Length: 443
Image 1 (cartoon, helix red, strand yellow):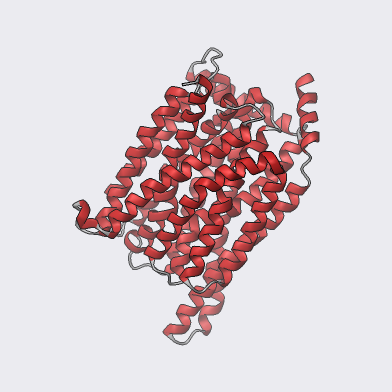
Image 2 (cartoon, rainbow, N blue to C red):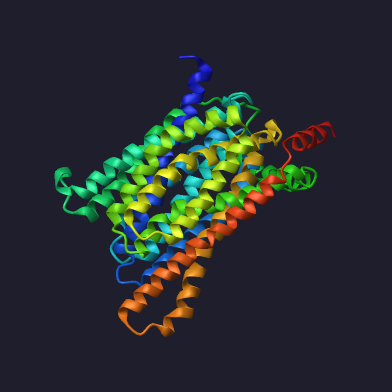
């Protein structure tokens, strides 16, 4: 196998590996199991808020860690070592979800937070390895290949997990609850096994790895220096701010869509089927978006994806039938991987290549800070609307209607994030950004 091609496939296979966590755990079974099993007996809007705040807490921790981790990796030439550490932290925590008992929502949230730290922390180093496996000409396609492999791999395991929950006896399991718990174990095995290809096949420049404590100290010093440099890289800062807003909407929809559908009264099996649709539509669509970015332009392709998400949000507020959820799943699948892949590759054009991990640390930091705001915003808006309207509800039917209206307001709040993001992205000038990097390097 050609060495460069082997590196590209090794890199893409990590997306195949960790997307099992993103699909089966984050988007699929955790929200359902949290609401029906770990938060058994809780009010629907309270459990939504608990899940939203749990996602926000995990994102907050990762956001503070990400830029420091990136700086450490750059200084110590240890991207793959840190990738392995955080990936297998996530693997261990995912396996630990198997042990959480019914009603133990606090333990479920804690282990979930630790799993997200592993998942997100590893992504800092995974993203930073992209420039080492692709040049500027191929980077949009390779970034899209990673996401498409993620959709395919995550979707295949998710399909198996869904079949386990629908037909537990055929898999030798007692019931669907036990099937979900064993699904968490299957994700841990899948993630841990396929991560080995990235660790074995992806090259990493060796600059003399520093001892850990020295790397940490130097990493903090480099972080301070990077803050100073970003003052002169106004285009990088502006793009990160735009990305902060629009990717917040994307991440919030990924994490909260199933919970939102359940709040509207849709059956969990219908919602899981919609997630499967996203995965298998997303596989070819992410590849197609990589090609679209090459031929039509990355900026215009990102604009298109944001516009689609804004339309999806408006439709989601008004939908009443499960068939509409399926249609929205198809539409989201067409653009979800594209906006993530092209944002990642577009950012690589604006930053110094020899400091990729450091700058991707900031990239992931702002993405995770955004993911703090979105789910928390949904929780706050939903609870506030319910608190205002509930005193006027006189019958159980009116109480239920108030809860659903509160959920619709909570999803509507995401529209603001896309709107602000697209306005800021319009102000980003790629040519100016490249000149700023050249000027900074020259000095």
